[in-house]
Image 1: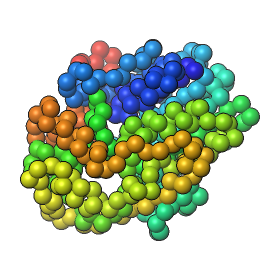
Image 2: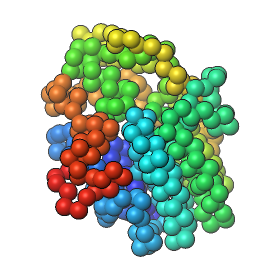
Image 3: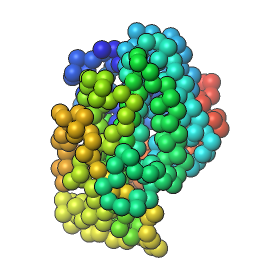
Image 4: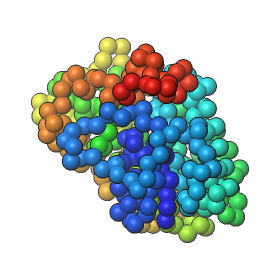
Amino acid sequence: MRVLVTGNLGYIGPAVTAELRAAGHQVVGFDTDYYANGYLEPEAWRSDGVDQQLCKDVRDAGAADLAGVEAVVHLAALSNDPTGELDPALTAAINCQATVRLAGLARAAGCRRFIFASSCSIYGQGSRHALTEQSPFNPLTAYARSKVEAEAQLAGLADTGFSPVFLRNATAYGLSPKPRFDLVVNNLTGWAFTQGQVKLLSDGRAWRPIVHIEDIAQACRLALAAPRDAIHNQAFNVGSDAENYQVRQMAEGVAAVVPGARVVFGAGAAADNRTYHVSFAKIRRHLPQFETRWTLARGIRQLYTAFCAVGLTAEEFAGRKFTRLKQLLYLLETQQVDTTLRWRQGAASR
């Protein structure tokens, strides 16, 4: 199958690309490449090869980009809550409006399946444990609201020949050729390795489900291959029931792996109103081959081993290469992109 993967040059994209190519799919990458220099060495870890690469803003997708494409895995977005709050209107334009436009182009081109990377953050402040796909939404941020609205509009495009699928991923973690340190497990492990402290900026009581990026990639592959009746116009929480944690439990897990690290609380650490404990029963029913291959402890060890191998420094950990908001602010400050985050003509090295 010829599959267009948007956001293939980001954090999750390389894992999805590798998973799909290993399954025999032909992958067309589509990415504006805001994070071109965001690799963690050594070079051997790079695994973002595709059969064809389109370097374009998702807002500028055209019919020709979908020629011969049989399915789309749509990862591209302004990712995470701080980045989404930079400009909520722009977040909606990229994460929702451009998503729906791309799906319309895909449907017109004859694509039969559109896998949308949504988020469990749409549950916001969950009022109970084991939230299901039918639980009420309570999005607390521009990022989460953009995912809710995109799901609703994509659902309206479904027909007998076009099947949108909404993968509501738990909070991602794990090693990638382009790591992110603005995600909770990666962040806590980076703090522990570079500072000897597992630093919590909240009271750590909030619940958060987590999922390794390779398990997200597995879900994408299975959603592409599943019978239409199993996935058509449906949402699936992606993760494992066993991988719901309070943030302080994650911190304690990091401290148990990283030698000498101890859990500390930042000044003024208070409750985080983003708290949700999620059920993953539905994906196991509809995609019975799906089984998470990673656990929190194993993922922390993976990150710690990688940080040891490259000698990750405090400066690198805190730098812009691995934090989405810092990199976008840098591109704005250096005028490489305009206020709508479009590349300026003749932009300097990214």
